[in-house]
Image (cartoon, rainbow, N blue to C red; front, side):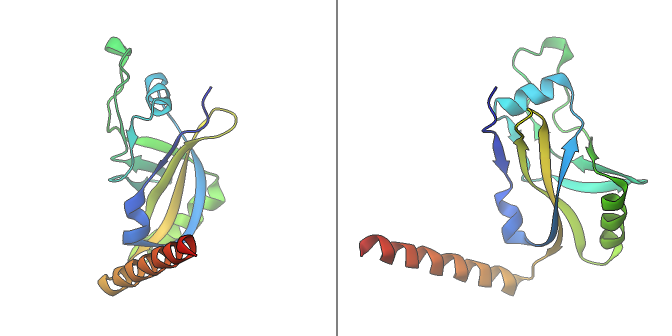
Amino acid sequence: MSTKINIKNRKASYEYQFINTFISGIILVGTEIKSIRNNKANISDAYCAFNGSELFVRNLHIGEYSNGGKNNHEPKRERKLLLNKQELKKMLNKVKEKGNSIIPIRLFINEKGKAKLEIALAKGKKIYDKRESLKEKDLKRDIERIKKIN
């Protein structure tokens, strides 16, 4: 069983400033976990939203399993996230504040073979914040180049 599945949302760190991160379980159908193990998932457009007191991930695209047949899953269906009550209450209170949202950062399979979703309570960056993060990234890249030359 391969535990090297690590699907990241690269856009998230550019668009958002992370306040707090959580690791949650995710309720999946049989063909969905097989597709994740085949690396056929995309979380770049995904976001999390509350439905009552439960947290769901929306727009998480998990491609159809090639050998699924008629029992295949719907690729962009809503999936429930598994967190404890204290974490859910904390996140619900923070999301009610203006500008905060919950976004998935990483989809991975843990040592026990369970699919987990790392989510972050995040605040959207302004344009000037995005420019600063690009400058920092370029600066780090230049420093690494200089180190490789010497």
